[in-house]
Image (cartoon, rainbow, N blue to C red; front, side, top):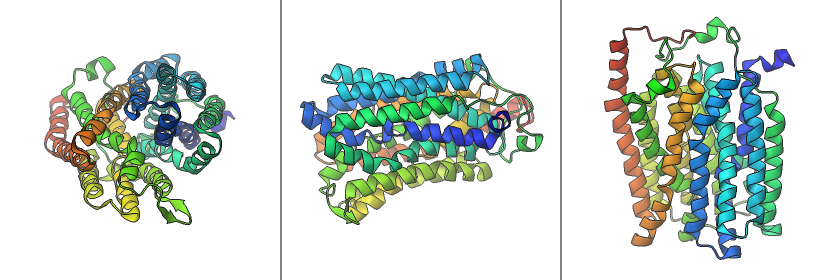
Length: 424
């Protein structure tokens, strides 16, 4: 077992499975919104506040959770933090199943947010440490578990909701997912000195030779530029992922049969989760070869086009599914590109904490999600919402090419240090 757990590919696989088990916390949420609103009489905007709370705590607590992982050490830290995350994930959805008030729903969201963040921060932090030579790909595969994992359960969750109500779906899926994460946690660890072979320390992507502590990173202009970029792209994607079922309903395509008796919404959710997952390793792999900034420009530029297309051409079942899939394919890569860029720029010694601080941008962006409902209610359609998200993506393209890239180049020149994937 010791030989197995010291294998970096095994650790990557275990991390991916853990991420699959928490994917429904975010990407399955849209399935519960309408049933909850109908059963409890709650306004959709009030229910979506629970989603914002989940996203906020799933991200904002990760620096603390990452610090605990590093403080406890590479052997104990991942085990204990992920095990605790599994317990919180189960408790949160079980509470959701019993919630008869919005307050209880919000508490459940807080528990699942804390638990999901513990799992996410640990698994991503492990990936960037185990794979300095394939950082974009490894983080992409890990994040893909979170992005695509819900595709496995979209149909079962909808079936349980239809047959037994949303409460039963919350209870049984929460219990099962949390238990699985808890059991896998005891097989996780991060690399000890010498665990990563010298040949794996060589990368074609420019990386710093020395690590920067979280305190120094937080006063770096590059970090805050990355943070702003992350917020803009994350907000555009969250406005789509949280609202996709509502958009389909307003476009009158939600219940149209699209493929083998499956409705447009069901097919769209499955395809979207797959595309969201594929985007992460695909663009991560590309970034390992052509660089992070150029990959950002390509991915986010295509993302802007995708949002516009959904607004102008998504009115039929097939085009709705295709445009939504295009959005997810060009959004999910933020969860591989930004952690990789952060670790390339600030080093791997404090990578779990540093990447977690950057990941809090997702929590900040979550509070822009209700803005989509405000714009939609004011204009009467989703078109202006989708145009706004397209513009946000194009802004980030410009920042990546004309601000981030020269800033990082100047940092390298100023430091005078060789930029390699050398050991810390």
